[in-house]
Every structure is written in C-alpha cells, then in structure tokens.
Length: 438
Image (cartoon, rainbow, N blue to C red; front, side, top):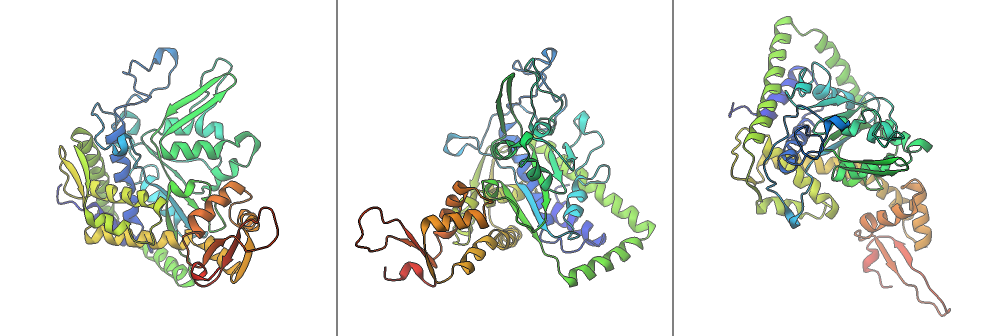
C-alpha cells in the first residue's frame, strides 16, 4: 500500500460523509498520529509497564500493559542536545457549541467506528484509544496511593500509555484543577504532556511512572487557560462558527441521512482501509525505525518567520515530523529527511493562522485597552493577571515577556525624574512605541 495517501483518503472519507469545514483540520490529526508513532519509536524501548522488564514485578502488584504494539528494544535515534525530546502533538480544538469539535474527535476515536479504534487494542492490535470521562479528578487522572503505598485503581494517564485520549470538553480537566481535591491537576498535566513524567510524593508513598499518551480535547471560546504553560504543549485548531456555516451543517445533515446503502458500504470499506493503513504504518515503523532525523533548510526558513514565536517552533517541527511519518512512502533504517513540500507548507500555514487567531486574542485585548497610554510596569502586570492569566501573577509576567515585549507598539523604559529612590519602569502602548524618543 505504498501508493496509499492517507491524507487524501481521509479527506475523501470526510467529503463523502459531508463533513463541514475540515479540510485544513483533518491533516493536523493525521500529523498528530505520526508524531505519536515517532515518539514511541524514539522512547518506548524504556517502558515502565513491560511485564518482561526486570524493573517491573507483576507478582508484587506492579501495573503492566501486557500487549503494546509500540513496545520495542531499539535504541533512541533522535537525541538533540543529548536529550530525548518529546514529539507528541496534543491537540486543542477551540470552537463554539455545535461547531463540530466532538465530531472530529469521534471520527477518529469513537468506539467501533473510529478510524483509530481497534476492538482488539487490549490484545496489542492497533493503537490504544479512549474517549475520556466527562468528569475526572487529579487522582483519577494520575493516581494516588493506599495506606500500603500501592497506586489505587487505574489512573487514566497510566492506563492510556502509548494511546490517544480524547476529551470532548477540556473543561472536565480545568474545572477539576480548581477543586480542593485536585489542585495539583495542572502541574501533573504539564509534565505528563511535556516529557511523560508523573511524579507525586504522598504521605503513604510515591506515584512515579512515565506515560506517553496524547490528548485531543475540545474547548469553547470562553477564555481557556493556556497561559501557564499549556500553550507550549497544545497545538490549537480554531473552528469558526458563522450563520453561513450553520446553514451548511443543516444541509449536510440532510445529505447524510439520505446516503444510499451502496454508498454506506463503500464508506465502511474506505474506513477499514484507512484504519488498516494506519495500523500497518505503525507496525512497519516499529519493526524498522529510522536511523536518525534531518531537517532541510527550507523547514528552518519557514520556522524563522517572525510570526512564529520562539517557544512555538518546536510544535511546528513536530507537525513536520508527524507529516513525514504518515506519507505514503516510508523507508526505515535510514535518516528521516524532513523537507517542505507544498502539502506540508499548506498545513503549516493554515495551522499557524489558526494559532495566531486564538493566541493573539488576549494580546489584542491588552493592546486596545491600554492604547496610547503609559502605565507603571506593576500596574500592567496586575491588569494582565486580571484580564488574561486568571489571577496568576507569575504567569502574567511570563505572558508579558513572551507576547508584549516583541511588539513594536510596546516598550518599557525608566522615566526621568528628579526624585530619589527606585524609579520603577513605565510601559508605553502606542504606534512605534520602541522608536519613540524616551
């Protein structure tokens, strides 16, 4: 199936099923799958849940995942700065109610019909997938211990190691982090999404393991908390809702209801072929991984564009890796060469536009609120904390450094004054603020 283009076939599947406005979004899901597979190739030779590992004692009650198709014995091959980087691409779908966030997640993860779901995933056939619960506690997600120091139950992050976990509403995670029993949710989420480590020191013992799950989650446009580090972990898909699009949804529902039996059978066969291709690509890559990774200069040239923030560059490199892992031709045993072809460039441009639409909304709010004003730095931090970072003062200072300081309409300066003592900084908002004579 070397001529099977999973990007084209999946878009054909969505077109014939009358999905609305998904042409620029489905490829990012496929890149996320590719990034997930690549991460396993580079890191899954070390597994905390391998029943054959001398470090895991199943008889002592250690948690094991008996059948995992991503487990292997190959050494790492991608080690920039002599480290093992993470290449998982966690997705955050941002859209209003009825905009189709859940439809996209369910298209891949829904039990039985999902393009990634395998009925025999517990037997090691296909990738592990799950649609997460509508409510979850920090202990339910990452684990706690009983009085003997044993981890209680089956925490999701451990259960889903090597799999893709979907949340139709990310609020189930963010709401839990505000409750007394789950105040550590955010910190554990940050580290588990970043390098996979879950580590908690409790009175009765430790919760300590490494997990390699990917999250796909939906959220509504009301302000969602990506300011305290989650923005570095999630790739954002923006789903716009307009009256015209609502009409298209109504028309699509009518067409979907009237699909003939013959067409439904053809679509079922197409879904099976996509599912089998992804499974085969995963198995092929695990059996014969790349020997290294090389980025072409044209990829660097795209990432160097000023609209790509420095802390975002790694996210876009992951998209490039995931895309090449899912291309029709795969050659293991040699370096995976990452080049910028027209399809990948279109994916990058579209995803960058969506990210800027979402991530720059707060910056535009601050800009318009304080336009043509000079304010003490302490007051600006206070206002950013109130308007953007939900009262987190330290996150507000980081947000200013990453988002305001690069802008030519924002400048910080020390005012000239005859009074003695600490003068403090003033922040200027206005056209060409950095060029103004101060």
